[in-house]
Image (tube, rainbow, N blue to C red; front, side, top):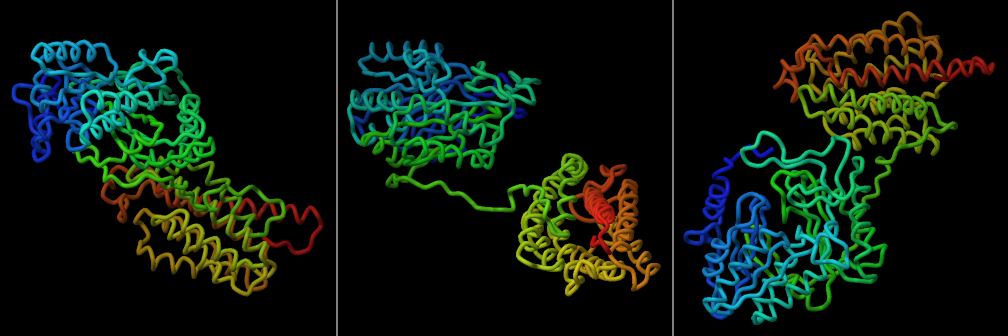
Amino acid sequence: MTVLGEATTFKRDWLDGFATAYGRTVRKVPGAYGVVARRAPRPGKVAVVIGGGCGHYPAFAGLVGPGLADGAVVGDVFTSPSAEQVYRTAREADQGGGVLFCYGNYQGDVLHFGLAARRLAAEGIDSRTVLVTDDIASGPPESPERRRGVAGDLLVFKAAGAAAERGDDLDGVHAAAAKANAATRTFGAAFGGCTLPGAAEPLFTVAPDAMELGLGIHGEPGVRTVGRLGAEALADELVDGLLPELPSGARVALLLNGLGRTKYEEMFAAFPRIHRRLTEAGLTVLDSQVGEFVTSLDMAGLSLSAMVLDDELAELYAAPCDTPGHRSTGAVLGPVATERTEDAGLERPAESPAAGPVDRALTAAMLRLEQQEEELGRLDAVAADGDHGLGMTRGIRAAVAAARAAERGGEPVSGALLAAGTAFADAAGGASGALYGVLLTETGAGLAGLAPAEIGPVALSRAVDGAVAAFTELGGAEPGDKTMLDAIGPFRAELSAHAARAGAGAGPAEAAAAWGEAADCAAEAARGTAGLLPARGRAARLAARSQGHPDPGATSFAHLVGAVAEAARAALKERADSGAAEPAP
């Protein structure tokens, strides 16, 4: 949502601010809503003048500087600048070599830039025009003149600016820009509308469970509405849109462009799939840029542009430039392999009928925590960042995979718990990841040297006592601070009391019963944390918000030990029904 700026003065205010912030690079055109490069181009150089409505930063004013545009003129939000503004900006940028106008293919821009070109001609200033028509969603391949200009603007502007910088005459700069435009294709998607300055509501909306494919940079309708897609599925849609118009075996430069609200990290998440798909299709990616280049205020979405490179376009694309919104060092282009991190902890382990005892217990916990992921996230979002459910899911999946591998490798219960705790902490991260890791590893340490059939309530209680002591030392929490400890403490106390009643001679069946009773105490205690106020961590700063809501850490602990209790009871019943001797939990 755009919250800064008034509708009537937005163009003036932001352009004044831009020219002030980047006054060493650009200067305002007297009497016009335009900027030109502060460094005067050499006499006789072709002036590349770009422009369009504002709301697309860094296009257009942010692309003025050495190696790119010599001037940019801006209109009101999503509105063409007037012919007078275009004329004044072009006159200020002209160095005697003529003017190349380059802008997106929109009717208002075509009319006003065209009128300005006529006025320049009447004064003896020669000009040429290249309309950017990269958006494949807005017209068929056989009618490129119907296509609008979107993020491919930057690639075409870059070619024109580099050609002018190397000294090409007006016809040469025009030819280079036209060639770049013919070689550039873009396809985009949006999942949230933009809000105009001063407006209370978005210009358009997209349903929360949908996204628009083929949307432009002004909120024009997309060509297709689909359900919300993940990063890889959306990457496939973007690539599938472009591939039919990219020649087999081509060398390409890629531009993954954010439309204003989509974060860089989100775009990076989609990019490996994009790169891999194009490479598998026989294309060679010589360079790629991920960022915001042609935006649409605060629109949520992104677009993928590809420019097919021959030797000349590769040279122009790679040439150095230095502007507020885009820089290039002039590095030599070359193919780059897709980077892919191999992380088994990110994969969900399937249930295994031949699992060992730790694997079975943690798999039960995994299934429960997966079911509760959304609710745990909701509880965490009350006074923190809302990632507890996701962290628990990541952690427990890694723990299951590690425990399974350890048990299949011959590790005892203690070794499997050590592997599980280490994997949990690594995959989950954050404070909860570290604390759950300690609980698992220290419980394993307390069971060292014991086979499953030797783990009775006394041994289990001692192991948990040691784990809780390490947990408390590491976390520093006290009972009543509204943390996991408020569920762990009652769990530990009930387990210890049951062990004292059962005595040293009790075996695994009694240990499973003790665990079940302790898990019930943990569940009751977790619900009771709703009446507490947090005293530690991020939640303490927003303590009042959490009043009436259970602590997410205490809740996840109760779910984990409760699921393990159910798995143990099921295992006992299964073994009893089969007539087996003393069952292992």
